[in-house]
Length: 159
Image 1 (tube, rainbow, N blue to C red):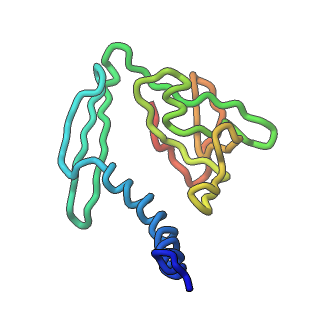
Image 2 (tube, helix red, strand yellow):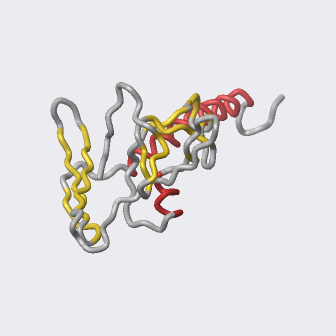
């Protein structure tokens, strides 16, 4: 006769429920980190302001807009420097936060598409920081063209 306070089946059942619930709790917790569904407008730096706008139609959507006064002192555009190689890889992959930190900037905006890119699972993706990628479309940094315009693609952001 089993003298344990809980039957083994109940313990295995609880462990199974816990294993199934863990991913839901992990990803569900991120919901509480979302910004409030309210409008907001605030200056970030001299010449740079941020606006958050919540809309409900045609479906709930949060718009984030940065307005940059290009005539403000100290404001200048800077694009990731390219280092093309014979295999047409033009630059190293990095997140927007890594770009911001590496070049000691106040604001960074992700602008160009690149390839190769794949994401199978949250932990199984390419590229990772430092992997070589090819910029899609025209890219110029400090007056040096390192990725030509591709047929059918138009520049997304030009200064």
